[in-house]
Image 1 (tube, rainbow over the protein chains, first blue to last red):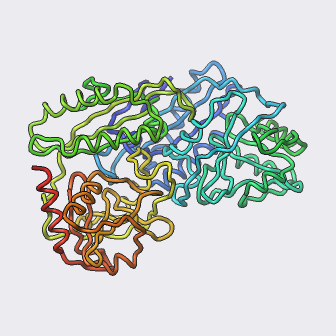
Image 2 (cartoon, rainbow over the protein chains, first blue to last red; image 1 turned 180 degrees about the horizontal axis):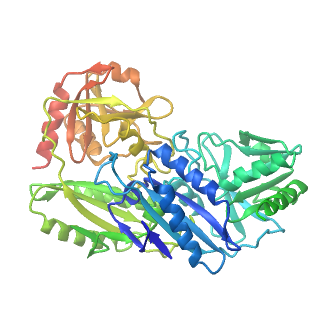
Length: 272
Length: 272
């Protein structure tokens, strides 16, 4: 099912600024066991993104809540809910109009056939494609995703699940579709995202859960050297929760360690 | 008139990757006096962009030429022709499919009410919004344009026609919708675009015309200091050709000088 501005519809105007300039934002939400997981956190990030891009959010909250409810009522199985908000239509040219009405697109998709916890761990690789730096776009989940598209096109092998991306200073930022954590000296380290990257909802959830569990969490610069010295590595996103990384191709192997397992248990528990 | 994949249509699928990720490219072409100006140069840049983004271009040339002809036959006045090519539809997720069929969107728009040569010159400003750096995306006219959208939202004043954008190292790159040239010691300088910016068709035309007219052209790093010491400044794009800049707000004034005028004449002549 797809709703565009509240109506069943699978098309939008070619003049929509979402298409013309990537002028908008999106959220990807897991719908499991009859529930949209971390829905309020997703919507909060979406509204923060709108604020950063100066997209008018008047009435958006009321409209989205009603439409998400309508979408969920229609679901009979686990699914992915994707929300796209664009600045709406606005002619040719970059200039925005203060009275433009955002476009709301809510679609549902089959849940990828992921194992729920992936206890064997996954194999990842390093991407050649780098992430650029811009504080005005960092952290939010906007529609300008060519860097991720190009990074994901670097490999096809089915056993390689994710690619790790660096900025132009060889600092680790994130995976193409996930955030990255490493365990070092018993502490949890994750790249700071003030200049690049998407501040994932599951990333924030993991940080909160770790702090709750008494594990120190540090958002910092993470270099390749830190990955080499890591005791555990895992990736996170809203669909996979936490996946242990047991191998970075041609670089390092890791154990599926205690802290990763502990955090998986806390996250699973937090959903009950 | 709008054609989507050759059919009169003003909508596209919400699953199109152009909307989902800004996964595509565009061209903006002036249609004046019954002619699409520099059409082959625009199409060549478009295909180079497709190659960079690994978008399959099989048959694209034949299809686009037929559709542009159809669009032009319908035009009765000067107009703007915009072409968008996206990677087409492709589910949820960044991964591209090797067999995906690109989406072609060709639309016409009223020619902005610009004076043809703007002999009084224009007033521009410096933008706060910076341009990020990534060699994989530099030069091509892709659909990830949030930096330009944010830059253009910084001002409303009607007498300020354009904003100049810098990278994060205070180096001048381009205007929000134009390329920038400065004249210094009788030579023409324009920012090199190997890490940021769009390599404009009119920019290339101006470089060729200048070389033809015996003026040295240097693509190089241009700092604010160079703007301060410039004898002439002008901006270019496919709709405005060349506009002399006579003022950078709060920074510098310039004469509408000989080299700018000479290049305007050569460009006008090259279209006959």
